[in-house]
Length: 423
Image 1 (cartoon, rainbow, N blue to C red):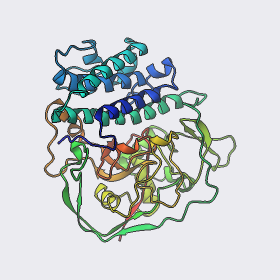
Image 2 (cartoon, rainbow, N blue to C red):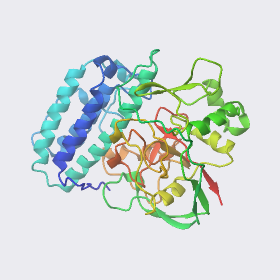
Image 3 (cartoon, rainbow, N blue to C red):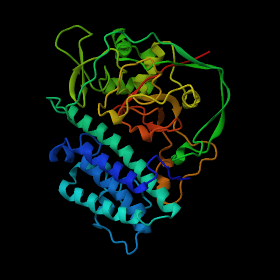
Image 4 (tube, rainbow, N blue to C red):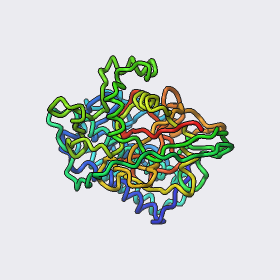
């Protein structure tokens, strides 16, 4: 079920304007050339994100609810359709960077035109189905805001000079080492997980259902750069016994020897590493959470440490407890990089946390009706679940029941590690 959220503004029109403006603000530091380039098949140009998130409102909302609807440009129905076969044909994802026409200025005019039409619709819309689709579109837009940051970071990392996305007031690096890991114990037993029905939830978060858990513990903090460097210095990337078979083959085929954006600094000291961020290259801060790891790397690290990755049910059982604060580094900060631990468990924000759970349907799962039912369900194969949000996730987009998912080799997303163990 698609349920409209009622946030503090109590005004969907204001929320619509705020979310849409936030996407454009992310594009402001970029040149036209930045917005049109595609660095790999899994990424998309920023121009395409700006157009596709607009296409979503035009196709699923205006086409259905606007009187006398007419498309802004009929060709956009194919060019900016991502994967909705129920809508029609799509341009191949790996070739989105070849869409040089329309130009960026035309895409921005498209956004402005659809925004104006949407605001007129919102001024009179009281249809629950319409409001639910608008809310879905806003949640979809916030997902694309994070994708913009992921994709532009990957693009700029391919440049030999490692240019910065924008300057920012970089937070003071904590001089003291992070606290020794403590463990949040859970006695196990019957728990309920899934969307509780209050506010918005994607269809893949429902229905809420019971799970049985054996006793376990979650680590009280995220794995840090310093922790992960210890794994590397101990030869973690050279020990096949630590790796799943497919992970070892992937590591060898792609010469993987460090997280996605680490580069060795000048000198032979193993500790001298630099990290590419959206604000340029910085010295590796050992106290900050490690980020941009694949599932295979996260799993190998957990095995090396004598622990394991949590299941998504274990993670949610802890995260939904009243004692767990909803705090962390989110996109709202404008830093777009995980923060060092400050005493809180860091279950939300900073980095998406890999779980050992395959992405699958909950018992009784029913996809949304119509073409929007393709949003989540058809991807429930060959992916693993991540939880908690990241430093590139808007804080009002995340919740304890939120399920992100990526293939095992993906690591351009802001993904890190929290350990678990059996009791």
